[in-house]
Image: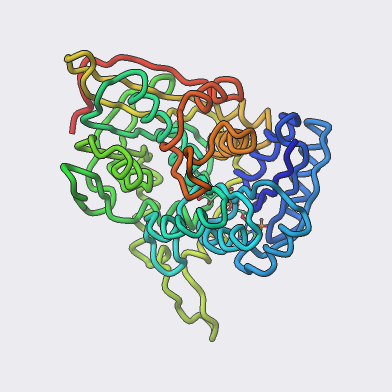
Length: 406
Ligand code: NDP
């Protein structure tokens, strides 16, 4: 029986809390806190209507460490699940340290003024978490998250060694809008407009954003153009699987999305430095977020499927072999279950699963260690893979004739 405090009542927080309510044997008591109480109340109403479970709600500004400490002290959770924005990661980790409470998130810390995607800030908490005897699980979403666990599963069960790994993220969903993002627009656009970067023979190879593409035929979605991008799990996979010579991340984008993005960039609307407007400082990207559709509003109109997975080539019993592990999620089915589209669903479900594995003790610090900061690929993939199948994200394995082309 475990109390959990979830911070962040957006699309991902909503899915995670619905799924926790569906598993009351593990999550005996859930409190959902966010910057605006009304966001939590909306989720709580839906959870009650769909599952019959009552959750508690609270208001918190998670940028304010003292406020978060006070909330944790009041709620007394065993685990804090951070589903707010990447900007809040360190402040919430500080509050967890002060209260000796375990921590989980789905996205690496980002400073507001620089789109820098790296784990260094959070890895720097390792000794302090160990000393406090608490655990942090980083990146328990889909990518990072499920894609990192797929890599561990491939290494444990399908290949003796992995030489190359490609992560393919396809959203074949259509929301019927000219331009919208499927999760927080500010975070999404920062990520997509960053230079591409992949890992090759022990170093990072950088290129201009969205400059390298290839077409891939995704199961149940069809042919899509996918673009080489940087994504944060490349850094942790390169660290924890040093045998992998090349690791790349690809994401699909439609031509209309890219055309809008190019224009927005050209006119300066994706800038994250302040500009003066009517005597007041505004950040163009934050203003753009305010005029774009709320990702959570897209759920009712989005049709189609996501297909996200890992293609790995390596050696098995002395022979070269290529395997593909992937998961397909239907936007309409996801919406019917929790009132959120598949991008939130595919992130919220793994957040619930990571939390469940921490709370039940299935995932814990190695023998002899008191705690620490861990990325998801450091743990045994099997219980996580089993729970994906049971909780709405079934996956499949295929053998391919050849590695993914460059
Ligand atoms: P949303 O923007 O929909 O939701 C974020 C929520 O955080 C909002 O409810 C917002 O509050 C709340 N929030 C923002 N600032 C604060 C603050 N200072 N204090 C308390 N609450 C705050 O985002 P998503 O739900 O789409 O994404 C949530 C997280 O999941 C993000 O970190 C995102 O990067 C990550 N993500 C990870 C993925 C993965 O596969 N690993 C994929 C997609 C997302 P309010 O509504 O109360 O104003």
